[in-house]
Image (tube, rainbow, N blue to C red; front, side):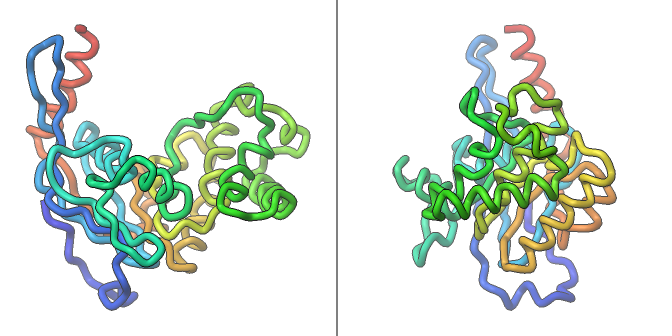
Length: 257
């Protein structure tokens, strides 16, 4: 599966690349069924500064699996994931765990569909925490968190409450604020607008385009066609019938286990 080569009106090919996926393949073994199911094979992807590449394809094609692999949540069977991290090139698949944590702290941001944080921590602290971990003074981090929460229309009366009690859309907006509070060189976005209304989706589009303007390399999944058209510079087509069937087989095997 080759990285698409499309027109280059913004001159991305002349910009430095900071994320390379080379020859990635991933399969899952369902031990209770005694089978191994391929998810994707020979994925090639290069993302440059200021560019947003959208993973595109049918449900079950392996888009979320690839995104999680780029964050080192999943380990592909073969290949390399090279990232530029504070002046050095690091292969995430070969990196020590402490190095992966360091890269996640300052180089790769990840916004999943679901907010997973320590229970009973106030929303303002949840959002500010990544900035504080990167060395920003607490007062400045909380001020920035307030700005993001305001832009994403989380009422101030909720900032002192733990987000576990919020609606799905509110939790997703908190998750987005947390993901964008640090100027990560690389951003991975898994359906960031899935639970949002049109107004809040437009705000997320603005945040993504602002990140692109400062030079972030972004890989995202956007099933909303309007959002995708507003932020994506290129599409990486994923999946074929066998990949979709394999992914469906994983779900079916898990249900039967």
